[in-house]
Length: 400
Image (cartoon, rainbow, N blue to C red):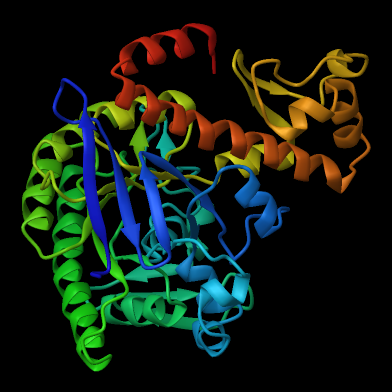
């Protein structure tokens, strides 16, 4: 078996959206699929068994954070991430490129994966102490934990991810804000292209060193910001390289996601899987699936869950609000998760207002179930030929 086998079972009429299966060394991912984020080898506040019970087929861990604690060498000494965290299914690791963005050019600017179109990339006094510096060779950064100095090159990123032992890893890239100038977007994109080739070369070297045994798939990352010409150039370049699949990176505005994804996926090889990095709100998931995305990851479901912002079929609610204190009804009558069948809105409201840890666990469980199974329903709708009807019905009731 090769590191990865991808099969397309059915396509949407637009020729982009599709349902398929992605076979890895540790099991099958039914696509499109939402990837649960376990940043530090744990989905926050949840056990592995709980994550499985929510329908998760794959988790993603963060290279940057695991490099700092507990270190990739320590994880390798335990037999890799699967044994270390007791997750038997597929695992993905990102390259650390987004942390380059958040600790470097975005440091102190309040720019995230979804930026406002009106935002301007103007440094403030907080950027003086930014923690990462980008050069052609790689990135030098200070640990946010203890201030120690580290240097990651494309080669080092791939070595770290091989030591972690994930099934799918990503090439090292430079993420940029959509508010950056065209010239910097182009500069960062071209650097990402050079880093992609170095990442691929190192990946193949490590496979040879492992006597040709290839259990790890490598995805290249398309960049280019909100610029159509750059996105298309990046898709053309990365798409021609010998990657097992592709990630679409960068920070977007709400208005840009559908266009940027479509530009890219009309060019990338159809027979290989595509992952939209860091995007996970329901309306954005529909846009991604319709335009040919097979995998998504995002911290939003668990982050929101810990804070009390919970998804329902009528939109998100803040369960802390006083209006829910005497509400004996379920969180979401249309949701089949354990939380909705077992606990009232009033009880959940109490847990959050009383600062009980259980609140964050139950909220995370519900949110992950909601998002994971929403994408599963999109897959089913594609296979049944009624995706557009499902999309229209869901979004007509859901308001962000």
